[in-house]
Image 1 (cartoon, helix red, strand yellow):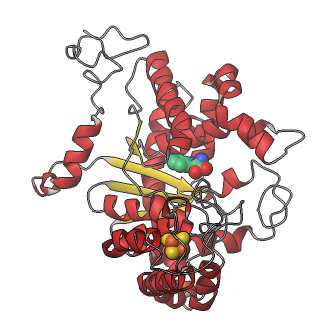
Image 2 (cartoon, helix red, strand yellow):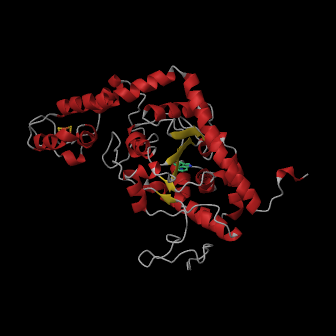
Image 3 (cartoon, helix red, strand yellow):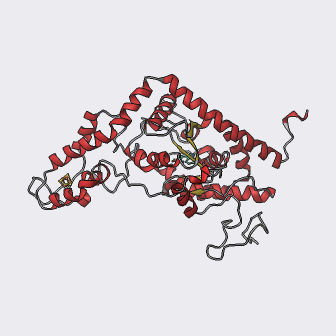
Amino acid sequence: MCRSQGCSSIGRASVSKTEGCRFKSCHPYFLSPVDGAQRVRHSGRERQGMSKGRVTSGMRPTGSVHLGNLHGALDNWVRLQNDYECYFFIVDWHALTTPGGGDAVGYENVSKMRENVVDMAIDWVAAGLDPAKCSIFIQSHVSEVAELHLVFSMITPLGWLERNPTYREMVLGYKIESPSYGLLGYPTLQSADILVYKGQFVPVGKDQEAHVNMTRDLAQRFNSLYGRDVFPITQVLLTQVPKVPGTDSVDRKMSKSAGNYIALAYSEERTTEIVRTMFTDPVKMRKNDKGHPDGCVVYAFHGLYNKAEQSAVRLECEGGLRGCVDCKKQLAARMNEALRPIRERRRELKERPDRMKEILMNGAAKARTVARATLEEVREVLNLPPKEIF
Ligand code: TRP
Ligand code: SF4
């Protein structure tokens, strides 16, 4: 029997001695990370007629997808679409939780919203997300998300939101003088995003772990309040993804807000120019000076785009046999080569707005079907009068 606080699955199965119960052994939806990893390798499960696990993830419409998004998230999503039922969405509502300003969209700065959302969708498809394999859509096109968010807001304890570490970070980071109700409720909206599709796995980075944990707590709270397993116990799908440094320092992440990024949308010339100005070892002035590749951004990117030669780069750099100018030229060439097919697909999609529209409309339609079914269940569980009663 499961003795976990709030577990409504009493008596269904025994509790694992090794892991202790966080619904791991008794909850029907639970799959351990190991199961998840095996599933990626054994996609034959599906051929045997077993249902795929559900994956959900979203990104804020920052406008230009950069190499950090590409290698830190999208490459992983592209792999996952083969083995899971995936829902990937651009979170335009979440973009409205902050005021925005300058380049960033927000509730005070909505002029670039549409453009950013569509550009991001183009970048996703160009990077390899296949609309035949996964649902790609815009968060706000599924209004059931808002309805579920409202319901969740009734059962989200304020303390959970106030303790959320990203809330403080956002208030400080964006220098928000008067945070809104929506910003405080950011993880509640994110939970609705995930749970409306009954998402079991959420591929996100460490920085989003607190939100996914809150999603799990909220699902458990809902299930135990109403004595029904409506929602799965969601978990983060942590996958080894390469760390993509900013162009300015190996210690900083590439990000739009830090301005230290290379966008998929950039031309080859612009990419080469940015590589030329990347931060390197400041004490290495001449080719025959001995360098320190560990603090050098160019060296880190050789690991991503020129893996086979990275150890040679190190030896030559440390031995004073390699000049930074040539080292950068070589990297830029490799980078542009690797990005060329993605950039070509981007250009093609940009010229076919109807194709992009179709992808987003179909994606939303698929997502809406699942979301409607969930909301029907939620309305029933909450004993809300059925719409056709009067
Ligand atoms: N908060 C996420 C981020 O900033 C974006 C997001 C919104 C999300 N809804 C989601 C991620 C649902 C995963 C699942 O990156
Ligand atoms: Fe960096 Fe290459 Fe210069 Fe070494 S030679 S410091 S790895 S750019």
